[in-house]
Amino acid sequence: MLVALSAVLNDLLSQVEEFVEDATRRIGEVSYAGLGELKSELFGKRSALNVLKKQLGELDETERKAAGQRLNEARGDVGEMLETRADQLEAAARAVRYEAERLDLTEYGETAALGHLHLVTQARDRLEDLFVGMGYEVAEGPEVETAWYNFEALNIPDWHPARGSFDTIFVELGGPEEVMLRSHTSPVQIRVMETTEPPIYIVAPGRTFRSDTADATHLPAFNQIEGLVIDRGITMGDLAGTIDEFVRGFFGTEVKSRLRPSYFPFTEPSAEFDISRPDGSWLELGGCGMVHPNVLRNCDIDPETWQGFAFGFGIDRLAVMRYALDDIRELVNNDVRFLRQF
Ligand code: DAH
Image (cartoon, rainbow, N blue to C red; front, side, top):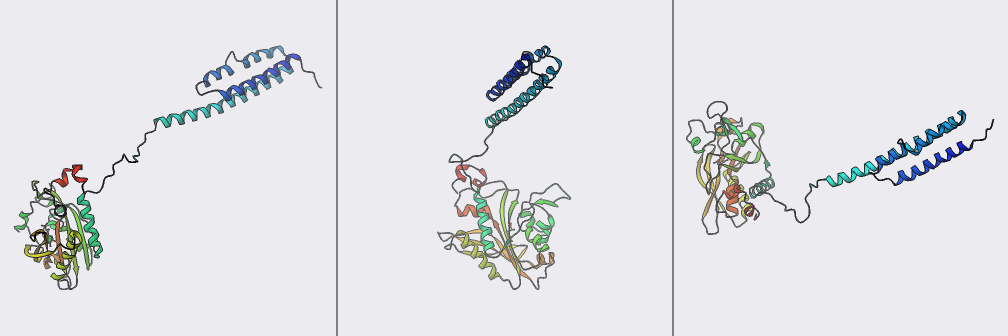
């Protein structure tokens, strides 16, 4: 049965459509700040929706049902629209806030001053490169050592006067004078020979420590580089040639080297090596020699089959010589005006 709609219902339905139209437009235009107000205007007590709801009472039951349904739908649709819009506006507001709060931690452009490696590090890297170029490998050892590695295995027993010359800094661990900051890089020789089958060709750069007061030529914490070769038929001539090769590689081909007889407990024969200065004088650089048979035996290497040489010198001193510095302490003062020059 088709029933003609009453004028009241018609009017009400068209008001609902008007409400939806009006709400759609206003939701599209609303700003983030206006959201709350719009919501109460659309759905609050005094909203058009509420007024229309009250008018439902003027309709008969069938019409009221139809109108009520349409009113609910409209309310739901408009509510959904408003929520979607609110989500969009909130995301946009959040993006603006994040952008404003962002901390730019990158430095770039001309204003950022780039540093460079410390000159001792540069010297160490160059030495490593030179020796790697000659077929050596780079080895490392701990900075805290036991008496066995720092002294005994290197043929320096505890009664040996050479122990005193090292001004060792001991660590309060184990028995008296059992554990120490290594006073040279020579213990790395032992660690390598203990764990590696010859032939061995290594250099071991690293920090070393002695209880020296810092002065123009001494630092209590300094850097050394150790070299060790163990192979068949190695002679003092190989040692001299190797020293010569690296001195010319490091300082330039015009610089000469020489060996002078000396004494170290871990080498026999032992020598000190010097480099030539432009004025014809000689400058002492480090110690070297043929690895002592006792040292080889301490590492279970048969001295009848294997021979070798070793050398060691200070990297900081090398840098001091190369750049003709007046005072070794400049290396650790960390005055950028000084460091920048290298
Ligand atoms: N370890 C010695 C020192 O610090 C330097 C040295 C001398 C190392 C002779 C050697 C060597 O390998 O054969 O005074």
